[in-house]
Image (cartoon, rainbow, N blue to C red; front, side, top):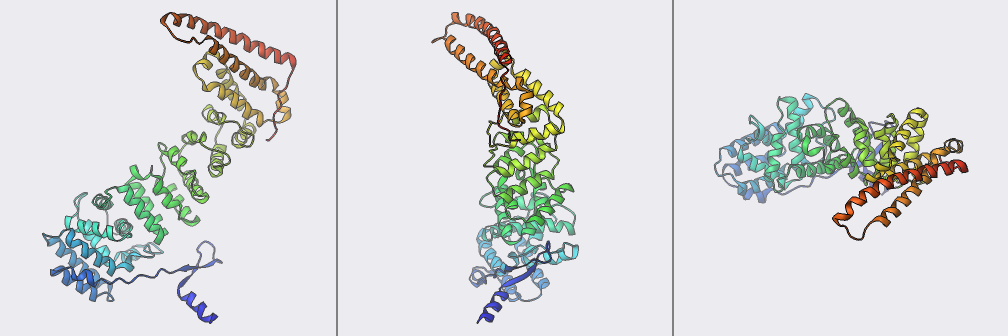
Length: 481
């Protein structure tokens, strides 16, 4: 009984050797092709179309070339028909989908892509319909009869969409000319009528049957329909949710060879923000594909404020490695310092520590320039974010310093207390001088009070700093470098 059970398992599985690790062997379940009774659909047809379909049914187990010739004859009859509409296309499409269901499931892309292998793969009956639909036609001029048939086929079988994409792109290897506009025309005439919805639907169907084919379709689809595919995160997730390391490597190579672009700087921040809740390997793929593009890290800075150290480790780790390759600059430093300070958040601390090691003098000059700018009273009154920038920046810097560095630069870290005291004083004075109601007469004195407030606050800043110097107090933070 045990032997019979083992033989049963072997008969229902493929024994596959991993191409990446020759020693690894695993079993892959074979999907059984469902037999569909097509005779009820055949009975709904009449005339020449019914006669040809009966011939196709009789040829089911015959030579593939003979079947293709018969389907070609069927297309000719359809093109000559003046009354071919959806009522005829409905039973015909169900007949064809049922008869050739096995051609639409399982692996479609050949293991080795050559002219000969592609000719064999594309030499199947359903592809003859695609050929007649796209052959010798200018963009947007598909024959209406075959377009009607393919649109109904698209609605009846989930795999028609990506098989059409495969034929249109694969046939370009054999014949010159890009025919992907035919797919767009089909999508416009389906129930959804939306190209990107059809692409997402077809990519998800393709990932269930043939992931290698999905990767094969990525470059032509992202190139032909760049305006709608690049900003779309659903399409991106349909790719990264199913590929393995070898397929990721293939996509990276295609990007570096200039065959495809998956990201653009204009939409990059929104796309990355949308991926923050994806699975770890999906995010890993997103960042690996991003690294293959020549996009400046500055275009990722809007995402920095959205990252949480505990919630987004994949994005933080990847962004840190990208920022590590950059030299410190005001544009990079500002969003890092604007992050809310947290003892457990090592993002800004790690980056500052790295920049200190790389060029301590440069980072000191950048901090000096930022502090001088942010401690300007007039600037502080006009821009409410500046106090948070200077205070938060000093906190991050203090957190990344050793005890000896904190002692050495104690005067600078005393500014933390000065800024806090001055901020409290400013708020209290503004509250006291705010009238219960405003009138034209009260506006002019308020401007005078504002100028005197500036001089008062300047005096207070100098006093506070002088008092702390005399006390020789040293602000000591936690050493977590």
